[in-house]
Length: 375
Image 1 (tube, rainbow, N blue to C red):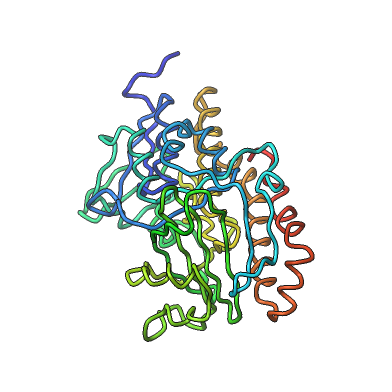
Image 2: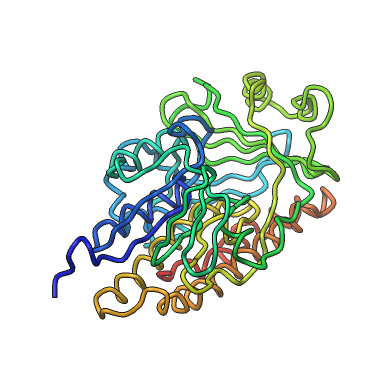
């Protein structure tokens, strides 16, 4: 029996970031009343870049968003790991890591958000609608004092999720003793065919460059830190001993976005009529570039279990255990592999360099092997 507009299950997605918009896009193709609320008062148009490994690209296609993203993205075909002077520690083709899973892409965050918005009916998004409180049974109180009740509330509101803090007994984000800076630079020297390249030094210092197409380059700099606060002085001085083109790119990073790196290592993402996705559920180190990928895979799996429940005429809340079961092992793998890679990078410099020269490609293959399977 075809559902009428009045009896369609009501779903609220909290957060209009990557995970929230991707999920809402595919849910709105089903007989559901889907709305999105976002605490920001304007559409997010700022940010640096994003590297999308092959499993993230696959998830975008499964969500029906591949065609919107592809024209704005850039194919990355190889990874290189160098020391701070530019000497090669390891390099390999990404096809050798991902095989038939597909291509890896890079894209500016602004372009990715534009792609998601272009594919979505933005009339379903309420900007400036912050969630003040939520309960496990689908009740939501907004910052303006209004209240609503839904058949399903999805917390896609990031690492500082209001939904998680209201409903779940999850630990607070754990500081990983690393801080980073992100920015986009321009470099005719690097060019559009350059590789994903990271330069590694001591003290946890790393400088990553990823081409975005044309002369644009996504730059990511990271150091070990005992505090989540930015160090005093000009942070770029910490990388002054890196060779070109790193130094030339760093010259363009005066307005870089600073952030401490955090992790949420919990395994409870469903409660009655409430569910968490993306960073709200399992924020992680960027070591494997799997944060966005796991968020997109969350959207794929949650949309599938909701679709099955609706098709069977079952309560959506009863299907959430299937989402949790399908995601738990995969998320655990990514968190553990991030820790393993971070430990390798934290080895004394001579030992780290030797390890990457001898087994860098083997390490990357092992990290990603279970992610070849569909989520």
